[in-house]
Image (cartoon, rainbow, N blue to C red; front, side, top):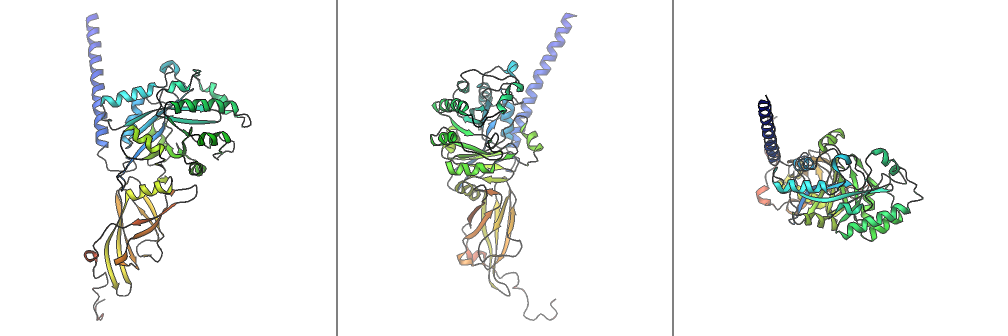
Length: 441
């Protein structure tokens, strides 16, 4: 009887092991198949820039079970790969560890697991880059640091709140008495900088002494000026912090948009009614971890939140020039009744629809009002009057779904691709009307 029971247990164990291998193969196949999908809101893949730089989507704010998240680190990586991301930073809370009985207190552990998983090649994640991060969590604000060498060193007192009831004090802020927190934060920022890390201000309107506003205190201003804080979240989860845009521009901070994921990213995205993942776009010169850090240091980032691109004028325009291509496809000079006319195609090679307003002076669209949506992976034909064919260079446009300050959208000149005027010049749509109209209509 004992032998039979042992045999059944062995068969059950083998079946479970086979199931794990099958699940692994299925997951690997799923990720491989996802890599074949064209760019779309579900797969944030962007073409390279005109000067050969890459545009990679990444996430600078993620939690796993090793702080207050519910996902295992390997799932976070699979989610990111499925969504087209090339870079993630695991940013566990430094002092919040609700699952301490199960996970212990090693804040490097999610990174160690993730790094090993990437190296294993199990899901073909070799192209994924991972940073060891940490979210420094204090009553007066939260701050992420990336590219750390030891996250545990940011918590020298080994303080760990194991229940959320213990963290209630973090929500009680006396904004007239912040010196203790500021002194503690500065020490943590200096340790991060000693390790070669780069840090950002998270969800800057929560908490805030003026709810809804990113209030720059003298302490934060000094952290910016000394290079201890280099970035700011303008969007996070399903929140946007518009005033943070102006702070970023004033103090020359990199701009981030993050999921701040705690549950499943797809679940949170669906609950927020979003058709794509919140992401930071990195304009990089390479594909290794150093290239992503370099993009942060050089402020070469663009936030992507609810189909809206936000960043400096230069960076948002770089992304637009990479995804949009205008071609002058037809020219009809001096057409009867309507004068010079022409057709242009605007193609969108990116994963997000781009909404344009045509603001070119003395330009008359025939088939659209001045507002035109260019769907992702598609193109739109514009028919227009008053075209100076021999001298046509492009169109001045405003990108409706962009922000380059808290209030302003990007305006730029969308250049036409080189064209052969003779090859595209035709007789026009009205050229076949006979001279004698009697009986023609």
